[in-house]
Image 1: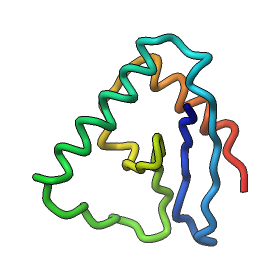
Image 2 (image 1 turned 180 degrees about the horizontal axis):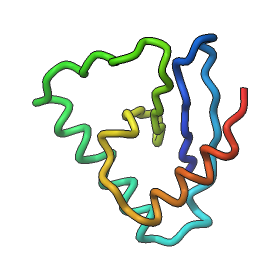
Image 3 (image 1 turned 180 degrees about the vertical axis):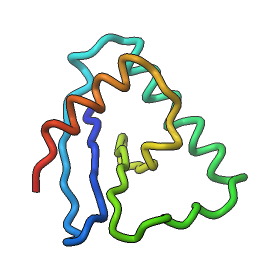
Image 4 (image 1 turned 90 degrees about the vertical axis):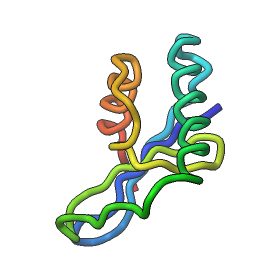
Length: 94
């Protein structure tokens, strides 16, 4: 059960990634991620198109779980999840 953080955009446009195995984290974090991706599947059927990027060369972050990607900004704040994302941002690589 891997969670991947993807940093896209920037001047070069080459994505950077970092991933971690969720099985070594508390069950509450795993359930949060599963629920967030499950809820977003339901919302995607009702949602409007994605907002345009305000600055074309700015970085955008996406989270991938279970072969599904979501923009990081649409996920709710959760302390455990925020800590995991901070850790993954420090590990981003090409």
